[in-house]
Length: 156
Image (cartoon, rainbow, N blue to C red; front, side):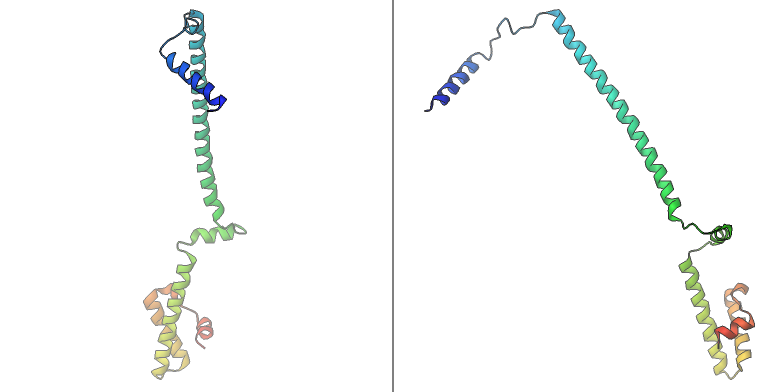
């Protein structure tokens, strides 16, 4: 055995023997010491409560800030157009642009098919265009129709 190990064993043995025994110097019987300890405990508890309050207030602020930033984020996502006309046009749009384009292609395809049908039936171009436009208006409503010049450009 080494010299240091022998000392450690002796210290451990002394600690084991003295575990259940308290020396008179270790016993605190002074009332003032007890009072100071209870006062320190109360102060620490008060500090903890204050910190909890601060944490609660900061969490509320954070939630408010997040909700405000969420609202701002939605507003920022909207494209900001030039003048009042752009805003008015956006406000009047009830559907998304992709849906509108799809509907326009559908109407254009219908118009083209009806025009080709009347051309194969032996009608002249002007009559075939007018009949195809009338079929388009019947199928999709009057807003779907075109003028003679537009029909000439589309169905040439």
